Structure formats: C-alpha cells, structure tokens
Amino acid sequence: MGLTLRQLRYFLAVIDEGSFSGAARRVHVAQPAVSIAIARLEETLGLTLLHRGDRHVRPTAEGRVLERHARALLSGADAAELEMRELRGLIRGSVALGVPSMMGSYYFPPVLMGFKQRYPALRVSLFEGGGPEIAEMIRDGKLDLGVIVAEGEPDGIESRAFLREEMVACVPPDHQLAGRERITASEFLDHDLVLFQQGYFHRAFVDRISEETGREPRIAFESNLIALNRSLVERGFGITTFLRLVVQSEPGRLVALSFDPPVHLALSLAWKRGGYLSHAQRALVDFVLEHSAAPSR
Figure 1: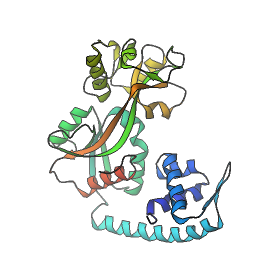
Figure 2: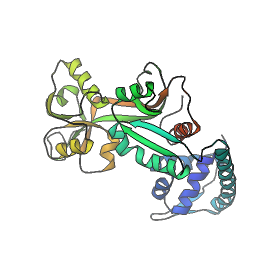
Figure 3: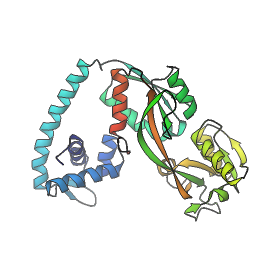
Figure 4: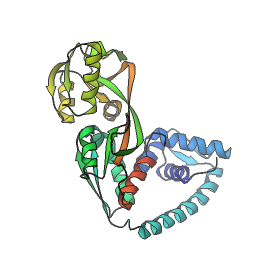
C-alpha cells in the first residue's frame, strides 16, 4: 500500500511538535493512532524516519527528505481541498447534531474543534439526548445528524459506525471492588446504583442485565447529568456504568471494571434514510468518520 495524506500529515505533526503526544493533540486524535500511522509509514518505506528520544522526537536524514516532499504534497492537497470546498459551497452552512451527554462531554469536543478549524464558517448546533429520542428527531427532520447505538438501524435511519467502546462498571478508588479487574452483572446489581434515566443506552444496558438475571436494580439516584452522576459515585453514594473513555479522561477519580463477559457498544452517526445531506452535513459525516476508530463498512 502506498503513502497516504493522513500518514504524511501525522508525520509532519510529530516533527513540528517534537513529540507523539503533541502531534495527537494537534491533529485531534488519540496518541496510539499517530504512533500506528508512523510505524506503518516506516514499514511501507522500509526506513527509520524519526529518532525517538526520551524528551524530543526529531527526523532522521531519511525523514528530512520525506519531510520536504510531504510539505509540498500537503500544501497542494490543502489548496485543492479549499478550492473544492468553495466550489461546493462549504464556506457557509449549518448542521444540527444530536449526541448523548457522555459523547458530547468526552468524545466530540476535540472532533468538533478540529471540524471548526477546517470549516470555520460552518455552524454546528448541538442537541443532547438519548438514542431513541435522537433517532425520532432525525426522522421528524428536527436533527440533521445524530449519534445512536449501532444495534441494527432503526426504521427510516441510515448510519455509519464510527466508534466501538467498552461499557465498564465504575467505582471510587476506596471501594471494596476497586482492586478487581472484572465484575459480573449479578455482582454489579448487588450494589446501590447511580443511573441515567430511561432512554439512554447506559440505562438500557442495566435494564437488560436486570431482566436477564431476574434482579431488580437498587437505584439510589437517577440523573441525566453526567457530572452529577460522576460526583455521586466518587463520593460513595453508589456505583454506575460509563464508557471507558470517561474514566480514562480523568485518571484516578474512578476505577473501571470490565464486565464478565466484556460489554462493548458500537456507536454510529445517523441521518434520515433517503434524505438529502447538504454539503455541510456531508462534510461533518466525512470528518467524524475520518477521525474515527471504527473500520468503515
């Protein structure tokens, strides 16, 4: 497989920032994505392109040669993309996007900031809600796009998967379960719970395991405010379920336990089946998929 513009963009970001972590922040992706892209680039070329020091990454002699060509290629590509965007009318437009609160708080901020940098004149309006509500608003034409759980497409909806994330049980660091790596559904239901209200995929998961085990959940608090739920768990008022990315975003505040067996959610970006996507809306779909961790279908 030949070189890709994404690999070259990540390669230049590492050189400019002097580190893989700085490059990841610059291109708005996770650091492993940058590391993997550079490793594959070096494998494709059969060359070592970067000196990886403890504190600073710098190009090798071979890397300097590639840097010169990469800057010229990306400059031309950016100029072509800008002209095509202008021809397609992407200098203005708007997108109404529905997202669950957890995704809106922890996944989409860097993605939307990157989108705004690429398309500064486009306007994105965010609506927070549960998956079924978002799907209904898409069908009714109240939202252009929305994030739903990819467990079969709802009627009247088209979608593309963009993220696969683990659902984990979350406890405070001083909890009796904090030293565990895994927890069964039955063990989870033994504890007081802090839950989202009906209509959110985390609540649907708890309702499902409750039905499967024949156990009624011991609900201590119900709230759709993610910051409140997290604070309640941190202070020992119950345990809950979050996506693992929530725990990873602020290490040390909560401990994540995998369910036994593990539970993963596939999330999709959805729009009205057969509906027209404007250039601005299509641009956001393409941007989210470009920065996703899920393989395209």
